Length: 391
Ligand code: HEM
Image (cartoon, rainbow, N blue to C red; front, top):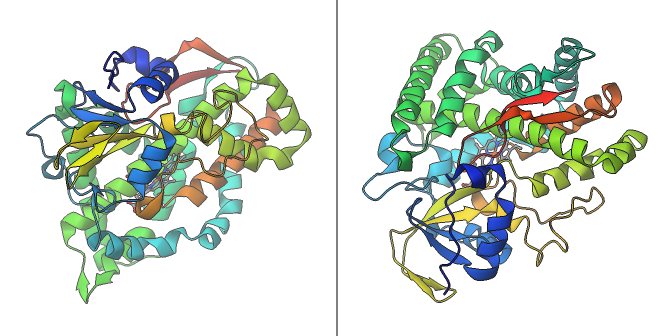
């Protein structure tokens, strides 16, 4: 099997535009060993989907980010849903899934619409402004803060911690900042959890504190892990979906015009935006047994990085996949993963994106972005922007 392809998820050039190297991986090295990530890398749609559907072989319990040999991610983080396998995963997921059913989420529509309008009311009518700090960052942060029951005024604090967390990666020796940020988030939540025990309220944190599995409350560390996961997964991803969407639509004026003329196309456009430039580019699994694929033999304990961003650009699943087409209806896209860990917040993210996009199309119509004055996020798993110049 050819190793002439060179791929590291942490290479700034890859972060700027990963799609050419993804194509090389799919064509020439579909089971690729990345020394930088100490991981095997799967890039084809069928391999990524098959791995997601087989959690017994591809375990999440040792972590979902590539880590260097000898680093155990489960020692770095408190236990959490996304880093667990059945049967614990099934129990934990059951506890929170009620809060995220499509019906419960649909009930948030008016609330989200008000937030979107309020935020856009505060942006300048003319001249460039930062789309991330002015809109794409605060919207999902406020929505998840309200659901959890933490003060929305704290959003700058928890956004700083969570952005630090997603930008620090363990293979570059800079993970200390990420651990400090996680510790700060745990401290932050511990005080609220104690308060909710004493004074229950109608929010997700109270529901977690009161939840029981087999007659037992969740241990404190699992509660803290849950809060961190919901906060980080609940807004970093959606922020970057909104930013990536603003860029892609600006780069496709014909699609922008069609969406302005026919807002009914917005839900399908959101699916295509998720496919075309997936906010979560890839997450890892750990093999539980020896596995041979594409002539490569991988050992139990090896890490495998599943590139959702590449699977979603695979021509075998999406004909002419590099072409952005709001009429495509890419139902099989894997931007939210698949199988037992399928994104808990998918309905919420879709609703936020639809309302946000609709409002932008109404207010700004033919907006533009200036990528030279914008800053890309420096994150292996998350694709998006730290700042985005919008006008
Ligand atoms: C899981 C992506 C928004 C909460 C996932 C997974 C992906 C993903 C790919 C699968 C992880 C895996 O297989 O290991 C996204 C994207 C979003 C988004 C692209 C926005 C565009 C949200 C929101 C929340 C959320 C708004 C809500 C609070 C979660 C949780 C999990 C998860 C809790 C873990 C589920 C489990 O392990 O069973 N997400 N997500 N996500 N997501 Fe999202």
